[in-house]
Length: 277
Image (cartoon, rainbow, N blue to C red; front, side, top):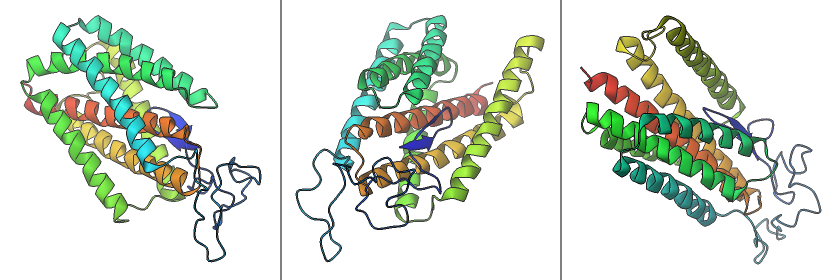
């Protein structure tokens, strides 16, 4: 699978904004050369009955909603546990910065691998969790209650996007995917420029992370994260519908975790700007 994320590009969508896995599945993507699972030798392909329904006993070893939920719970649980340990131990900010860089490196490593690696994904979760625990503790001491508000905001965005996706209010297609990816690239480039200017000239750089502009870009960051959640939901839906191997559930969990971390950090930053003096 190939998909996109506010930080990285990962498998999830074939060309046209759809993911194809099952050669026996009816539809415009069945048998597509971009579809690694749409080959006659695909052992995960669902078998169609004469009436168009799925034949029983043909779903062993494939991605299911339960497998995605279980892997996501493990990955997010690891992030939360690591964050709690870092918070309780009151680790210094320097360790958090190192863990953030390590997490980014692990995420890139996984993104370039041909198959999902559970140990690599869990190592990413640990390093990212330590970073989140440290930065959340620091901001929470400055703005009491900021961490809990960011958690509640992230949960609200997740629930809202899931509802709108299930109701087809949000329609993920090729145009939507291209727009979100292009917008996120532009957003990240601006953040990099802002950071470089801040490092060279000191202060707040271009002012994109403070004041009115900081609030605006914080909201944009959350909206982009919500859009990537929709892409993640589409990846999961297509993976299940087209018979992706069960191991791809780890990749779906990895993508969802990265997106939720992104949204949480944007909420944390926005709350610090709004409530900080």
